[in-house]
Amino acid sequence: MLGQEGWRTTADQAQDLWKQLAGTRPLNLDGQGRIRLDDWEMDQDVQDRVRKRWEDPATVLADSPAGPAWFYGQFRELYGWDVPGAEYGVLVDTAVSWPGGRI
Image (cartoon, rainbow, N blue to C red):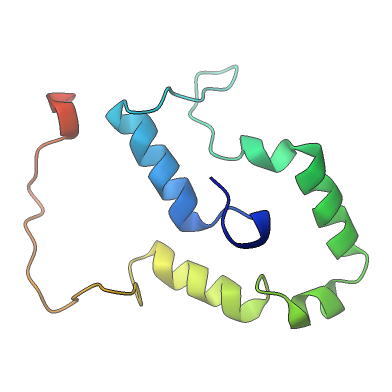
């Protein structure tokens, strides 16, 4: 799954990891048996796009959704802050069983 402009967001990666751990998507393992969430980054199209952006990073970042504001938003979302629709004042049960009873 790719996010805005073909880049993966932290939310995309978290969903991918969850699906792999829950067994709804096959595990994507490397040669050492580790789950990989970054394999998409090695795609030649993604590599070419990153290489192009590095030619003039100041200009690209100033006008890009991947600039400082985007990064700050991704960081906050990764740790559960500023998520649209989240009700931060509501108590939640943190003792929930693992899907499919796999633990």
